[in-house]
Length: 177
Image (cartoon, rainbow, N blue to C red):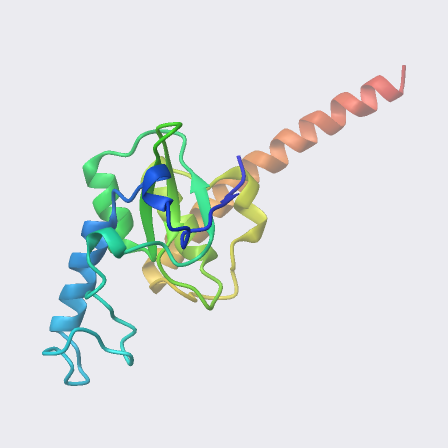
């Protein structure tokens, strides 16, 4: 399933979405601000660190208008890891009770964060996303996480290629009849 468009700025957004990872993101931002190297740890935000923990739990909305579906309900540990290890959070669509990943940052290619969040949450990257993951170097993740993403991409692409070769053989066989 591909991402869906969501207007996170909708004034009625809380009727439709539960921001299950918001408190974790809030605490993560608060910790970052406490360690601010720019001397802003006594303020409510730091523009240099791009850190804004003053956006309390209920106002800590995703920043890009997309939601990426998860196949399963994530555990509390998975939600914690996604929120702490990526630039993503976890949200739940109230009407369907489905869970989604959503970006907490923007302005650059965060496909590596989305891929990493899927690896954490589901053990693999969404098939529809494989070709969209930025592979020109670690862009928004650490070198170690980048290697993890590349390893998973290689594994899944090999499976995809093998499946396509098998299908191509079947098609050729049918054409030769």
